[in-house]
Amino acid sequence: MTFTGADPDLVERAAALAAVARGEAEAIERERRLPDPLVESLRDAGLFHMWVPGELGGLDANAATFMEVVRTLAEGDAAAGWVVMIAAETNALAQWMPRATAEEIFGGDARPICVGTLNPPAGTLRPVDGGYVAEGQWPFGSGFPNADWLISRARLLDADGEPALDDRGQPQMRAFAVPAGRAALVDTWSVPGLAGTGSFDYSMHEVHVPERFVFEFAAPWTGGPRATLPIGPIFQMGHGAHAIGTARQAMDAFAGIASRPAWSERPAHEVALAHHARGEAEALVSSAEAWLDRILAAIWERAEAGEPSPPEAFNALQLAVAHTVHACVRAADLLFEAAGAQSLYRSNRLERAWRDLRAAGQHLHAKDRHYADGGRRLLATDSS
Image 1 (cartoon, rainbow, N blue to C red):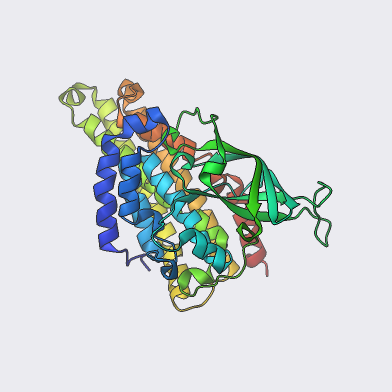
Image 2: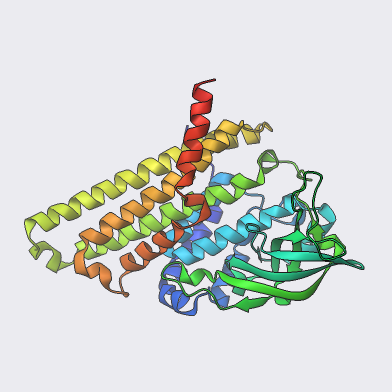
C-alpha cells in the first residue's frame, strides 16, 4: 500500500515557496525567524491552514498532502518546513477545542497562524472573575515571531493559588489561547541547528485569559478523517516528513559538491567512499520513507472510512517516525563525512542541512525511548 492522493496544487505552491526559502536560507538562519514576506506568501498559499476544518474556511487537506507539503518545503529550507509543520498541526487543534472558541479564532478572513507549547505545561492558570490569569515561561515556541495566536497548556491553580487536583490527586491541566502579542519573546534560541525556526521561549505575566479561551481538548466537533485520530499522531507524523525533506536537501547539496571538477582529482578511495555514502544514504532515507508512508496509508484509509485505527497502528506510527528521523540523521552524517573538509563551510548547504537534522533529532518524537516503547508493546502483542 502506497501513500498517495496529495493535492497537486498545494504541493506545487509549496515547491515554489521552497525555492524562495532556499534563496533566503542564510538570512533565515541569521535572523532566527522566517522573513515576513515569506510568511505572508505561505499564508496566502494556504499552507498554514492545510488542517483547519473546512467549516472554518480551512483547506481540510488529507494527510498525504500535509506530508508532501512539509517534505517539499524542508527540501528548500528546513526552518521553513518546520514552521509550516508546527503551525499546521497547531491550527488543526481547532477541531478539538470548543466550537465557539474555534470560530472566534479562525472565523471570517482571519487566517491566523497559531503555534505554542502543549508539552510540557510550563505555566499556570489562576482563576479570577471572568476567566484566568496566565503566568509563566513556555519553551520551544517554534514560529513565535510570526504567530498571531498562542495555544499553550498550563497547570491549573485553585482560588488559593495551590495546584488544583483531580479525583486521583493528579495536577489538573488546561489548554488556553491568547493573542501572541500578549506574550513576551524570551531570547533563548541560540542554537546550532534549526535556528531559523524562531523556537524561542515565550513568557506571560499577569495575562488575563477570558474563560471561553480556557478549555480541555474534547471529542472533535467536525467530521472527516482527522476526527478518527487522537491528537498525538497529528503532532508526530510531520516530523518524519520534515526529516525526509531535509535529508533530500543534504543529498542535493552533496551532489553539487561531487560534481565539481576538483572532485574527480581526489584519490580513488575517497571517490569510492563518496559513492558508498550516497548509496547508503539513499537506502536509509527511501526505506524509512516507504515504511512510514505504508503505515500512514493504512491509518488514513481507515480514517476515510470513518473507522479509528487500533492502538497497534499508532504504536507503529510512533516507531516509524522516530526511525525515520534517525535514518535521515544517519544519512546526513554519512554525506557530511564523505564530503571531507568541504562540508565544514557555513556557505555549504550540506553543512546547514546536517546541523538542522541533528537539531531535529533532539525532538521528543525522535527520542531513542520510542524504540523501547515500541518493542515493549510489540512483545506484549506477540505473547498474547
